[in-house]
Length: 332
Length: 244
Image (cartoon, rainbow over all chains, first blue to last red):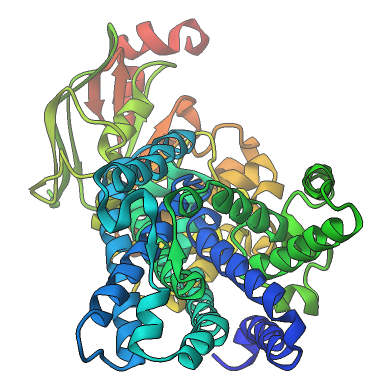
């Protein structure tokens, strides 16, 4: 295993670092690049499960929101003591709690619903999102419908400069880190026994089962990994936004945008979400600039056209078009 | 008498009112080559589904190497060494021919890692004559090639028991001998027991040591191939006047 075998991954990482570099050097791009990163990371996390299994989970945003709540509540709790821990300890704890909460939820939901096939699974997971939202609003935990806000706690525990640094720069780097971890996860999964099993069950679940693939177990493993990363992504978003309100946190639009970006880039490919995310982000931005107010109206047909032209996503199309060449070996 | 590998005890399976399998008893010994014959709808494929664990049985038990496997899910049975091919080939269409066979090889007890699985897949593909097509997508293969791919996938994990579901159906007669000689060669090399389901008995009869005649879910005869073929009952029910 030399550099040659992993050069597709290197290209991807290089592209990500370039984006991060642009963000650091040109301050005006900070806003758009950090939004872009969140969406790319979200799509990558989504792709880890949906791309590899072709199962769509509509409750995805629930894991992100749970991560936001878990991370936020942890920060609030740790900062409420008179002598707060150092910043990094607080953040490591918040990421850990976010990941663990999402993992537990994914295990429970997955254990029950992942036995369902295809569309039935998608339907079963729609309720997850709304259920969790109503639970939080109804019982009033974590601030209930008035939301969970950690801005004051951060300012009080440290100081205003640290607060600004945390929300503008550090949060972006944390989201970037989750994104890199996700990319490595997908990459390692696709090259492993688990990846072969998933590729087989994506094609034909019954045949894969007869050929020795533990289909339920494999789907559950990848679902839990992906949900855990989604939870950690939520913790990063919480640090960025420093506030969370149930209606926004559980908005299904996240999931839909993650689906769109993954499909645009190429489901089940590692490079897909970043290319899809860039294409989607730029398209949305340009349409907002050129047709203000009409961007959503213009976006839908534009996406339809792209789906017709690139049915396997941009990366999938490139791989088919340049089969056997350098370009194919650069894309995963 | 060689060691017993698989034993079915009074296995029954109903689909609605149809008794697809009706108290089937069957023993397969290690290294044995067996043909299960019978007309359409006799329950041949259902028998395979029962052995590979695709659905739960209504009654009866299945033993493999002395262990009760009646309730094991399909993937665990594969690990124990039960490998099957499908009657209508079900290749993983979007994967390459090589990757199809790698999946077959990878999920087994003897093959530890992906590299070993790839080596084994290369070896098997060369054996069945698909090596030159290994980088093609499985969907682009011709029908006979898909049958060969089924065979390759089933052989790749070094099974102890190979279940071949109509492996020579739809294959040009000239190719049948090639495929069956190959099956016999590999099974003798690696001590694999083979159970072949066949509708067109004459094609494979010379390659097997035993024939089981299945009719309406019941084992009607279980004997040497020529005895089964020449029996009154098989002639009456199955071969009929065509064979006279």
